[in-house]
Image 1: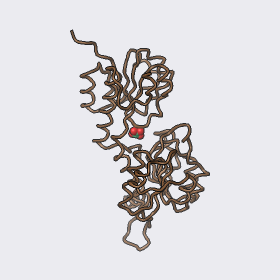
Image 2 (image 1 turned 45 degrees about the vertical axis):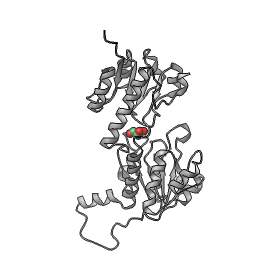
Image 3 (image 1 turned 135 degrees about the horizontal axis):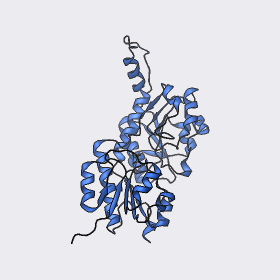
Image 4 (image 1 turned 135 degrees about the vertical axis):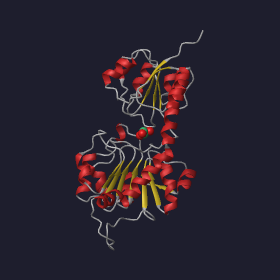
Length: 327
Ligand code: DGY
């Protein structure tokens, strides 16, 4: 007699190989049409499931958990998990997992793409070429700023922050960082990075890259007051989470020249953008694609699936974010 497989809900489209793996171990309710669940529909779909594989577009809170009495594990296909109420999961005995590690390099690459793109005005000049505005070479044409030999300030020096710093070695940059805790001296040496307070970093950096998780402590970490501390020639890069930056304050700072430019992959209230971003030429906009390469998204989905199967088979998943749940 074959063993009963646990029922799991996969809220968004995933790769075939992810579904194949999950189906070997679970009864899978999939959503390959990728129609996002409204909160009420998610509660209905989850009612008889033991596992949930979800994305940052799904809110997993106490109310949802109350509708899912069988639920044992939630596997987020993301390293950030601010969409999940972790204490509520722990209180309900539900394991929660994320996908750290596999996306570090792709996300660091994207932060660099935003830095280079903003410094050299790539999306603006591309728009101008397409609009027929390029009539020939001129000495002072669409001047950008240099990335090489500039000062890079990284706020949040976890794995992704360190990957961003290591890439700066090839650009002969001075690297400074701010983090809740200073990183180990050997890591500082590897990244060639010096620790500064946030205010010192903001006032000294030519590029400020944000790589902190979004929590109540980091909500609007960068607002009008912090933007004023930056150099008028500086560029802000947010490739971490919307809400870390006060978007209205950033629009004002980009409009009145408080800072030179910004490169953004994330926004408050995604996918809605502050409408004024669309009017500004000094901001490069990307649609939350930091980890979006084929290899990395496949690795993230597979890691989430493995976390889920481990949890449902009674093992401690490698990326458990609420270890207290096992006590
Ligand atoms: C993450 O892993 O947190 C990314 O933002 C998902 O795309």
